[in-house]
Image: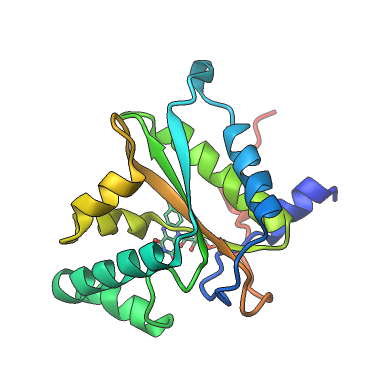
Length: 181
Ligand SMILES: Cc1cc2nc3c(=O)[nH]c(=O)nc-3n(C[C@H](O)[C@H](O)[C@H](O)COP(=O)(O)O)c2cc1C
């Protein structure tokens, strides 16, 4: 199995980060992998916002947990059971902001980021729940800081150093594959 296939096989959702900052050259390598993603007609209908401001990450996390505690008890309990943090103490969030109607392009960028981080030995998890931060009381402030005019939140990937590097991905279910011919 070549390195690319091995990286895809080993990628898993990391839900516990040490909080240690990611080296800036690694952040840049991941950002480059992101913008190298293919997009329909090469329109690149997205931007990547790399958030490493600890105070902002903490503020978004706390505001969203507060919202979940009131409005989505099941999700709140799930995050409490995973350590009590929406962002699992990740020091770096790659937010993919997108033009309306470009979900597929956004998804492809997202996976590029996750695989690039995995290939560097960094823990990472795709985090759709980050969208909730923009629905909190501080949502407008977060939008002003993170989402450029004409774009909307698409997806995020949390990146950092895994507390326990032994996480395992879901099992590959080969029964989902059909061969014709
Ligand atoms: C679109 C999308 C959104 C996701 N959002 C979250 C999230 O908000 N929080 C989280 O912990 N995991 C999230 N995940 C991770 C999935 O739960 C995970 O990929 C799945 O359980 C398979 O596990 P694996 O990635 O370890 O193979 C998301 C994954 C995708 C593709």
